[in-house]
Image (cartoon, rainbow, N blue to C red):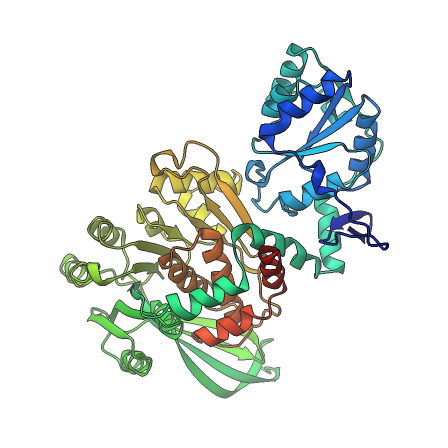
Length: 548
């Protein structure tokens, strides 16, 4: 039932022992609504009830000692664990183990009689339902001034119960243990991610059906800076004689669509019908861009408002980047140019299933443009998404969008808040912009998805946000350029099909992984995405769980 990893255990889906006897631990799991009945049944036979409450992200020896101590304080031990939605860690990445597996871990302990998943950040609702004779807390709470614990303590005592503190003789850090385990056995991630996918409704069958069928023909407008990404592949020669700098010899070059243009190319390759609205120059690079767009059969509205098209030049030895040269300056639209672009966009609004705004800092997307376009688009367009590249204040002009996908640094920069926890910053920005979905990308660490727990828009921000941590799916990080663009493209398409944020975030992460595992900013095709998803172990686990 449990897989031993160092000094703690992670649950597996095994349901029978070596003799074929079913280990029915799930019978110990009690819904919150049945707690009072369970408590009354035990009280009627004169049995005293002990409550232990915590996160229990992984069950380690410290937890076992604590729960054994609790069991000795009465006749029945009920363990309540804080549900995923009620846990808020400063980095937004915990809990690591989903609540279902945490509950199974605790229920498998022989001395635990019942397990309940608490939907609130404190144990107060559980205490009211159980009226425990004893509430056991760790030794570290004996002199705690935490108002949440003090409220629990007052409630227990007001109902006639007692608070007892355990010895605290074995102390472990769940975070340190998890990090150590993942470092030695990365395959553990698949089990946790599989449980999350099962909960989110993310499985191979549904994803294949959606990507193969529902993506096709979706009309998506992409508004933003188009540019070219040029790679110069070099051979490292030696250290130059005139100065301690590396001497390289160019071997080959490759040019890729970049910025808003690669987002349009991703959408086209995934089966959609994108329309790119951008600004260009009157130079050779512009003609190259237009030629590439025509090759991909991407329709476009390109206003010639620049002196030159933005481009980025990168020098590489093998896959290692040595230098990036940004060959562009910002040229914001004037009022007449803005009117033309907004008009071209809004005149076609009723045709679009989604509109993507992406600001790369070269002047196409401005606060004024967003303020003019968004109110006109909102009544007609089902899905509006947005992103920025770098510290762009335009993020805070994307009012009413359905999804934003900034990095943590971009989010904190826009909010001007580098001190509060990530969930707190996310809540502040989402509430300010009335945005129901936020995917904060964090490079190699993956992303954190935030959305309201309430279903009515007027109540979105009356309680804490729900959050889910999604680790990076790339098996080998080769070239991260364009990963965020691939994420935004695929996630937006998923939202147009009625998918949840969790489903959209997973597919977006898979598209980003395809991009990261190769050199160059190439569009992700539908077949490549489906092929990649077919290799994911957690999807097989989720499909098997759903089928069962």
